Image (cartoon, rainbow, N blue to C red; front, side, top):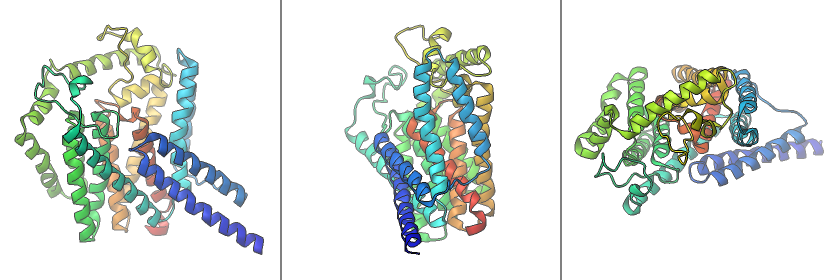
Length: 411
């Protein structure tokens, strides 16, 4: 009896430590990839230790296990098609390994509504710190002419684009839209006035930081998210949320110039994207089944360089998430990747409509909006090329799966 008691107590302590490792991953993920990955490794080892102590696998089934397994297999097979198999294999097991581990670590160690709420609270707090560092960067940052994130001739007045703890402004913008979507979903449905006001304040902070990234694709993603909330929750919300970006666009010429340049055929960024899409489609036509190899886009692009014509310039992704994934892992893999995204979004939509817990219902609505924002931005960019944002994406998917599994318990 004492042995059973001690084993159970030790297992509970492991549960506590694993949850806090997951919270640490969520907190540090946008701040430091290395620290976040360190906590992910610790949490995984503790999870394996828990299974050893309990003498059972302890693996919870989800409706997405089969498509996720197919994605893993097809991605692995694409390595064989890579011009540098060693690089693709290293890139594959380092990245895919992180994504699958964080997905199933959350699914198998986060179960109660209280745990889900703690996890999403941690994500929101971390995002707030990232935004404030963006403000600091805006006040004391560097001239973007040194890094070439914008055409200086077309936008002579645009001297600074914040990127905070992420690698560049577009990645920061993608992150902020994802978090704003989650915060807005919870804020729309939560009943506590104090919490609602706190979330509104956070959305404003994130929104201002988003504006300072001058990311046009992210602004379009915001409009898509606004439309989603207006359609699925309350049509009046559309006008309320749309008011902020309209004011920003009217109040600052640079914002308007950046937005209008989307349709400008002389805009170098837009022209480059069109050229990259043409090259990527050619890759897909030549390698339809297994793709060009996981992570091998930059290796293969020179053979399909119809625009840059500079051997010294490396193009790492297609500036279109769906085309990029299809090019690297083939058409079947691209379809499975898209199916996983759509599947989690559809489950989030159903849970948002059915869940009796207002905060969980709002969270599902927010994650649905976040997945929509990723899809919309994915038409002109590939923010999931960034490891931190990909890990966040899989974490959000895992939260949807957790709520779906436990719907009968706290739904």
